[in-house]
Image (cartoon, rainbow, N blue to C red; front, side, top):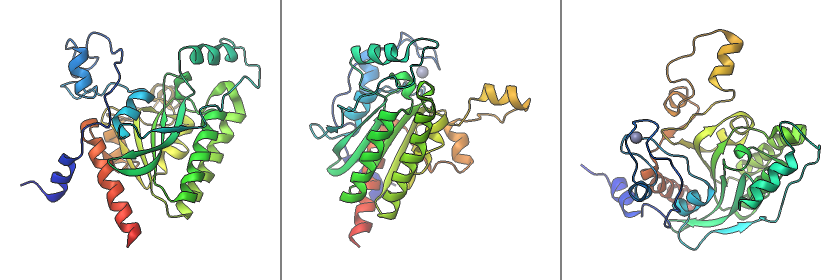
Length: 282
Ligand SMILES: [Zn+2]
């Protein structure tokens, strides 16, 4: 028997806009089935077996933001190699190459609407140096969080990150404290903060703002943790539990609130935004 909530979820369109084409290989890495790129795009890059392919920033924006509503902020804040990092290759070269490929840092921030609800939205992009938290990423996140706290608009964050950017050393690590302080001000202002954890979310990002949401959602295929399982095993010689660092494991451990398939994510977020804005009015 469908509930009123089920009805409401069905009324929310599956995607704000048309997802861009993405290179996903010829076969699903989970079930091995041959992939039809057009079909897969229609299924928001979820295989029939349930495998969720990683989305890049533009795909997340197309999926979540209502068509034509995304307004990017601080795209002109750019990074450069402050520490003259050279190993394994020049950090400046790494940045320049990513910029030449049309990528603009590991975090994009702006305002948008989701099913008509205005909000601040930040999405990580794993293609840019593994989605690592950098000075630029931290600055864009902190500014967005502070503007959300002032304006009262909810904040939605989509993560995909290997952690803090080692090439920026302690300057990247201090971004963890900076963004956490900004999340604290958002909480103090009573503004809702939602996080969607996607594959992978690790290191300084899971250890800072990724798990501080009022509601933390995760995609089914997401690996979430601090240090990778192999490194932990090498350091502790311990046998790790079945499914260690999977979204299901983190749900059982109480780190996240819900595991939501991508096909239902937009509807779930629309519902949450509606509930929180109703609560605010009361
Ligand atoms: Zn599959």
